[in-house]
Image 1 (cartoon, rainbow over the protein chains, first blue to last red):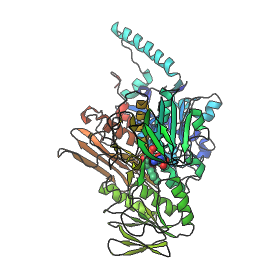
Image 2: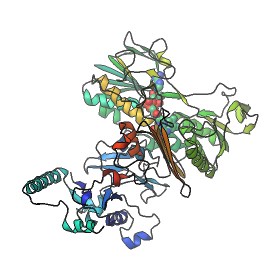
Image 3: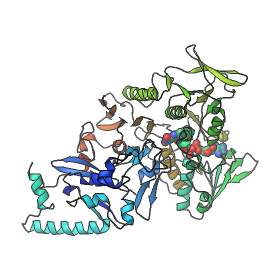
Image 4: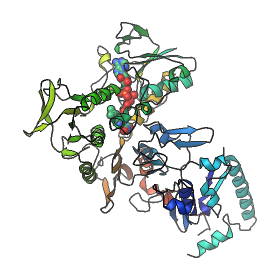
Length: 193
Length: 416
Ligand SMILES: Cc1cc2nc3c(=O)[nH]c(=O)nc-3n(C[C@H](O)[C@H](O)[C@H](O)COP(=O)(O)OP(=O)(O)OC[C@H]3O[C@@H](n4cnc5c(N)ncnc54)[C@H](O)[C@@H]3O)c2cc1C
């Protein structure tokens, strides 16, 4: 099952993912039009400073089993096995906050949404952009990420690739060569500070 | 094997489903005195406040019992359990044999020992039927008094005010939620209560419910005042539902005593949810704390152990989320440290009303309260539950930099 794979060591904190996420979850899915919508578009991904020029994109991991699902008193959080996501149904959500009490990654925001117009606020988080998925497109944050910090792929395949990469890097290092695991552009950017 | 489960709510269903997964052929009978499909008890205040609908209360489909292969006896009260004969006795006179029994009978609202409770207009809120009764009465009511400012009382008061009723909320102590909230959080909560138009009466409790022609007209209070009202909703705590265990040695007044496997004094009887007295996750002392997620977690352990899995229940970490209109609080763990070496950290942002309060003891985080911005609550509670020493953390929880970035972004060697 494809998922968003985060490589925090590549993130430069440009926040393009947040913008793309907010636009994708607006009614019009258009940046300019979204600014004028009655429901302020909300990004479901956050980017935290990680110290020493590192940034950390933080979003729902779609845990399975999900702690938020287990504590939801409204039956609003359900596993979607077909998509490999843990989804919140905004129509059922009653904004009680129990999910934030259970989430180990701190990814929930509470805000009004056009999907449940009669509610003051509901719990919002990453949904892997179902509308895009239906069109065979990657999630908005992945498409917006220009440095490869957010990728859409199969975790097993990514892990195997990373394992091969590390093995090669280790081998190269033991040969006396030095190999940086981050692209030059990012390494240079970090050196600016 | 023949299993019987008393109670078809959070704990009973979690137990039944876990048992079914482990023992696909088991004969499992679920009994409840309530006749509806299983529903979410915590949603009752939201139903009362018209923030959800009756059909959204039901968490399982119409076919649920058949799909899971559960036999059901709904609308059937259990009157007695006979551990010697391995039998459950029902109100209709039948006796049901079992090999193993799970008691998940929950709790019932307490009522204070004061005169006037028989009057029409006196309510408690625990069952769907209670909401239906309340609805009928509220059609002719303008003023409602809620007695008890705990989690349920607060949510009920919010719901009633949301419907446009005039609400008086009585707190026995000097603040609401006196058992779980510090003074600063309580003050922020009280400001929110005032904004909702709810009249909060501190240090107040009723000495009698007063009526006229069989209907509630007022409440006599401890300070001599008489508070006019059309209805009284008592939410002054709950007691475990164990009346059907009279004559056995299984029950105690604070809850059914259980060991770490949620086994009762009888090896073939397990218990889970609001009816048990579990241990506190941090102190190991018996601690009753009634929340839906704990009932589910206990039901899962007890259900597995019915099938012989010997799973342990680690204990309960008290925690709750108080979400009123315009106020969000998540609090859990200890309100104060256990030892004199303990320390309390507080940080209030007066302009936003955001507040963070952390309780440390013996080098570990043992309690956390967040007001306003609560999204990282689960991270604090995980540190509390894991007993992670603060010195092992990449960033101190007191620091403004305590967030996922500093916790999980690790500089790569040679990248800086
Ligand atoms: C109004 C309200 C709001 C709440 N809000 C929250 C919240 O926001 N968050 C939260 O975490 N918790 C909340 N709670 C607490 C939560 O609902 C309970 O902790 C949870 O329901 C406990 O589940 P349980 O399965 O142990 O017991 P219960 O849900 O009480 O279920 C026990 C069942 O057993 C049946 N039963 C009992 N005795 C017998 C008998 N002799 N024969 C047959 N059947 C019997 C009962 O009728 C009941 O159906 C709230 C509770 C109330 C009342």
